[in-house]
Length: 128
Image 1 (cartoon, rainbow, N blue to C red):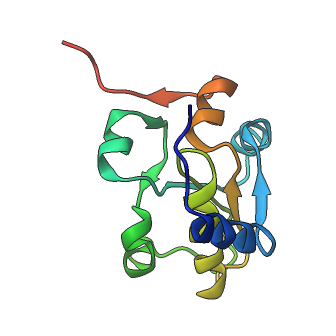
Image 2: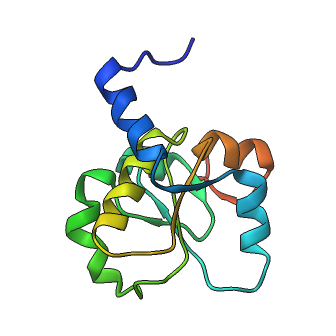
């Protein structure tokens, strides 16, 4: 059984989802292969990222995203896809980046689980 989220958190997610763009893993696959620049940001916690992530993704945890995003010198219209475990945290993060002025931000609905199910290239730690 999945984690039970609080009603206020779910309401915040739904509000964000109403004002952001979203994609799913098959769309992400197409974007990764269309030859156009894309920045994929994993907004999960560091331990989640270290346990496995999309190959080529950069890690900026949701808790520090607004503080640290400008260090990456991304154009305001850079194509950015954010992902978390399932799409909740990344939706809120996408809304925040939109408010900061980025105009081409998407949240990956289905997140890490969708990436794995789609068979996208992963970076996982080697087991000794």
